[in-house]
Image (cartoon, rainbow, N blue to C red; front, top):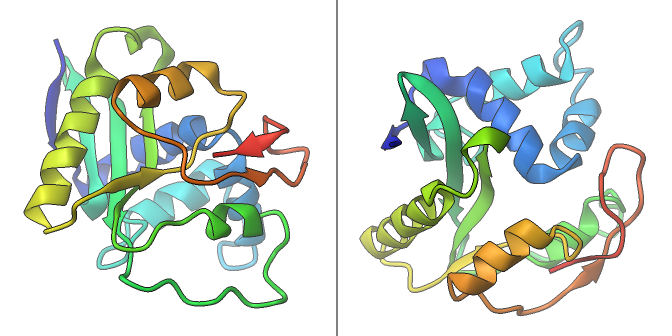
Length: 185
C-alpha cells in the first residue's frame, strides 16, 4: 500500500520524472526553453532544479507524493489559480498557448498527476485526487481543474470517473517532444 505525504526538497528529482510522465512531453518542451538559464543541465536536471525551488507555483511545496517502501511512486502537483486570469500576450509561445487558454480561474489547478507505470490501477491516483479535493477545500476553493489530452484514454477515464467534466478544448500545436496530437481538454 502507498502512503501519502507532503513532498520534500529532496523529492525534486522524482517529482520532475513524474511530471515528465504526466505532461506527455509538455514539460520537456518547457524545459528546453529554459536551457539558457540552466546551461549544461539535462532536461530532467532542469526539472529537478525548478521543483527544488520554494515560494513559486512549480515547487515541491505544491506536491504530495505517494510512496511505497520509501520510494516515491506517484505525485500530485497543484496550485491555486488567481481569481482573474490575465490576458495572454499576443507573442506567447504558440505551442504553449492552448494550455494557457484552458486554465480556469479560481480553481485548484492540478498541473500534474502521475504514477510509475507498475503502480497504476491500485487506487493511488484516485487517492491523490481525493487529497486534491481536500486541499482545495482547505484553501477555500470550490473547484478543481486540470488539462488532459483527449487521446490519453487512461487519464481521461480516471478523471471522468471522478466527476470531472469538460469545460473547453483546444487543438494541440504539434511538436516532436509532445506525445499527442488532437485536442487538449
